[in-house]
Length: 356
Image 1: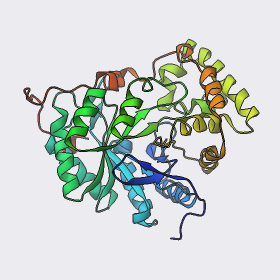
Image 2: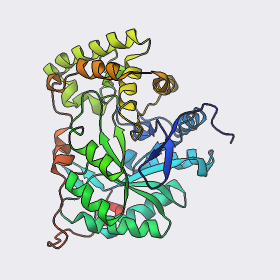
Image 3: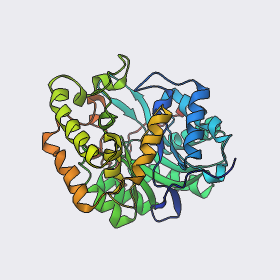
């Protein structure tokens, strides 16, 4: 395939040499969660189209679509020049219940998951391999130690963490450099700004915001169009009942500012994230080419420091109604992600990836 037809800015993610497009693509939704899943053919097509438009950084995970997402991404890669793509995937979430999430990070589990992902993706290496959530039952050094061995074997190029606490990030980084931290960051989710963002910059770790459009809220999801009844979003704390009614005001403010900047609300909200720094690479996802083009258009929205402040002030964090996370995921967010000391007892059971 020829080079991408659109020149998307490129940035360094972390300080170990990984270079990516300034805007990534989150593949999770292609196999259904917010909407109905796409056919494999349509899912592959949108990934290929994103590449043609200059996006080279694609994010998936073993848990998305019960493994189907990695298979779809792998098939798309067959139509792309592998060396031009930065492929990220994740391990660590074993299962989801109505009130809790099961997470595992034992060395055996890390290796089993990596081997399984390589097979599903049908690739020889993973560019960026994240621990999807932190296993708080074992020292982080054990998990990162196995990831380091995978790097030494050439199966993984760079290591990432997601929803990790400051202590976990520091301890992980001491074992092997962490290239990227994937965290929720958007206009209405900014709890990482005080502690996590400065720490990443101190250590030279890139930041990959997931849900940069507030789970589609600032793109008008649920505000100007109704959610499918089977959508995972239909039960999100910020999109139900009184919380939703209060939060609609925030969308209206962003829509008003977007009109002043001659762009869509989604573009303005995404531009705000993009303007947080050259080390920030958001990964919005979509199932529609039109929305993909809209997201890419956010790269052309120029904001001054005063503009960024005005947009921030339009969505005061203390006015956002409802928690950012589902109840089942709450205890697996970064504020609860410390792990036992390295010399403490390890009571975790070994696992295999068959349980995912």
